[in-house]
Amino acid sequence: LGPDTAAVTLVEFFDPECESCRAMYPVVKQVMAEFEGRVKLVIRYMPLHPNSAYAASLLEAARAQNRYWEYLDIMMARQPEWASHHAPRPELLITYAQPAGLDPEQLRAAAADPQIGARIQQDQSDGAALGADKTPTFFVNGKPLMQLGYMPLRAAIAAELQ
Image (tube, rainbow, N blue to C red; front, top):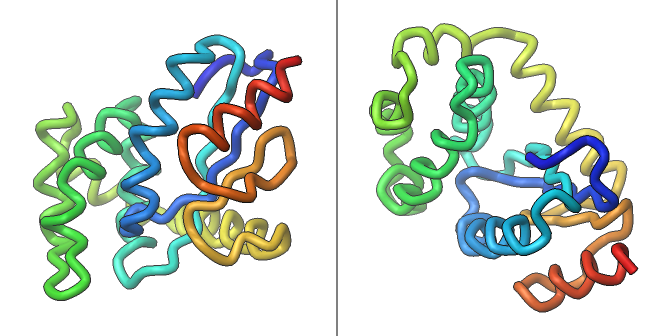
């Protein structure tokens, strides 16, 4: 998300089932809006929870239908119902397709593509190589963000823009 020519690249190693990722999601959106046009967001997957790889594969399938961000918004808003650690219901994820403007059957078929699984595994391997062992993990122009929250993320981006 954001222009390829942005001065700052924000990379997030993200787990769609992670409560901390959900908590940081509005923070990232706020910072992206604040620095619009100057920051590019790159989401990489770090599926650490049982249903995360499936959720990530659906997100990547949504990208093929040009509805990634819409589907991600719904998935994050409804995370407590599908990703409850006590009673997960990953089957609900496909029901969010239509409200995001996606064709559910096309989404399901595309998510099963082995290339998507390989991309998710590559993200996880790359993250591990960089020391990303929890989610979310952020890098601002290649530098790890040491503390989560609006102020630390905003300060790291502002410092890179100076």
